Image (cartoon, rainbow over all chains, first blue to last red; front, side, top):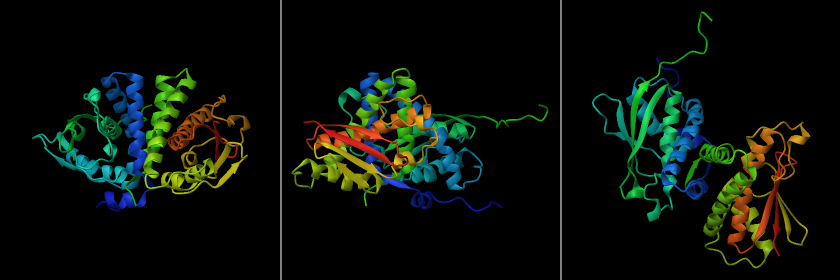
Length: 186
Length: 174
């Protein structure tokens, strides 16, 4: 039997220290804007945002595991559900849903209807190639890598590009067997 | 109550922003990294003060605007007010937050006197102190941006000689 059950995203979000979302949203916007000025190329900004997200994800996963009390997920399906229902909720305060599973159960979409990152945001014509929320895909990739799953995360739909929701495709590339730091014969 | 996100979101974003500019883009040019971080803060402060003053009458003098920063503006950002405000009545104001939230989780050896720079522009040898002073360019930029949106051009620096208290020194340009 599992020990004390996992906590819901709502319960965790209610218990963590929270801050004014405007500060977060505008700070993220100001960073993107500064990166556009400094890096000039939209593709470079996409890469940088993804990298920043990755770095955040590899650290954030510890907090996630510590506070969520989730036990080991049996499969990738459960992992995706936990990210959408618990992960998004406890950090951003919004829930996401999981859809579009492929037959093998290794590829799905995380759909986000409400996204605090884009409050007040409109992309000018010069930034059409920008994946404004690329930090999020990086966070997911980084966090999953820390729990031994190599993934590819790509945007399928983006409200800033005229779609009705945000849709992130998460594709499991391989599950890396856990390596223990010490071998018996060493 | 407005919308909220977990504090870890803003903490990790700031950490990552500072590290990108200091270790990645301008690894050997801390003054350039500092300028960018300050500029990001400026942008945020400018927009926030625009939002938080929409419903207010115009401030009649500098002191009133500074008081707004100490009370309403700081409360929106940190859920507390500035603890102490001093002025020399000649355009310099010192805003002290006794436990500045963004420094509360940073560790720095308090016994090493020389590790604490008096001002973010003095680069100490210690990496931790340097990271901390880099971090402070962001709130300095926020304050400068907020005041500049209220029509008050100024220079803002931070003093962390009494950690965990942090004092922001605002010098209004004549």
